[in-house]
Structures are given as structure tokens and as C-alpha cells.
Length: 185
View 1 (cartoon, one colour):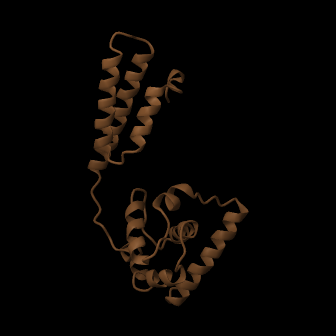
View 2 (cartoon, rainbow, N blue to C red; view 1 turned 45 degrees about the vertical axis):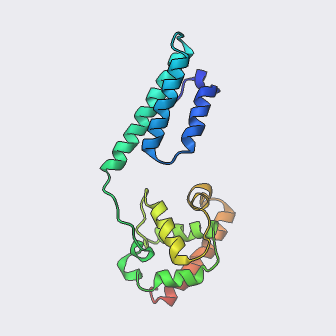
View 3 (tube, rainbow, N blue to C red; view 1 turned 90 degrees about the vertical axis):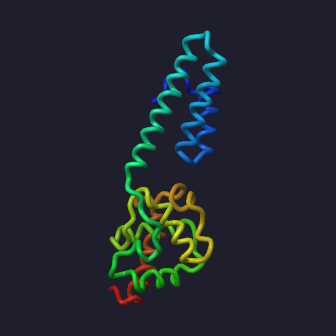
């Protein structure tokens, strides 16, 4: 948690904004170190709030370096085809049946399709693999399925909301029909 004194600080807000525009962690670290150097050069003779900001930069750099270390220690997973995310007994027919059943669908419907497949234990999808899954699904389906952000970050399935339950059950029915079509039910 940041100190209250930093809540509206322009330097901190600028750093957060610039950091949000960079996806690569090593590049984020370089940017934070550069911003810290610039800030230190401009505020070298003062104490108090500038010291809090320097400490904030140090904390953010440490946090990013920790993320980078975790990412480097994780064994890289080879890019896969869409079918390879499915359990072996479903790989032959279900991906094609889903493509036919969800033709032209995008966004929330695609997210609900993924939620149903995960709930039923049909796909092997874990945290950190969503981008790869999104990319192979987009290629496999061959149409605009929506943006990665729209599917995995913006829409949140909340099972207690009536509208979510109605949409979820509609998608579940489509998947059940696709499972029947592929002789999996």
C-alpha cells in the first residue's frame, strides 16, 4: 500500500501511467530506473516527500524484478494449437463443433464458452495461459472473437446475477448440443 502522501502525486501518477503503456517487464524496469534517476537529479537537496517517492520507485523496481524472476523460472510452454488445450477425448471433434456452433460470436459469449468448458473440465487452461489460448482460438475460429481485454479482463462472470445465469445457461445449452454432435454425451 502506498503512503497517503503519494495518492495524488504527479510524479507517481506519471510513472504509473507510463508503466501501464509498456508490456515488457525488463522495459518497465528500465523505465522506472530512468524515471527515478531523473527525479533524484531534480530533487537531490530536499527531503520528506521526495524521499517517499524515491522509496516508492525502489519498491516498484523490486516488485517488477520479482515478477521477472518468477517469469524466468517458469518453464516456457510451447505455442499450441487450439485442439491441444482440450482433453484428449475431445480433441478430434469438439473444437470443430464449437467453431460451427459459435460462428460469428464474440466477446462475452466467447468468455462464457470458456467458462463452461473450464467448469466441465474439458479444457486444460490455467492462469498465465490465457493469451496463448486467445491467440490460437482467434486463428482457429477465423473471425473477430473480440479483444483479449474484452474477453479475459473486462467481462466478469458473476454467477449470482440473473442476467449472467441466463447467458451462461444459453451458452451451456449450445456446448451441450456441440457435445452431442461430437458423440461426447
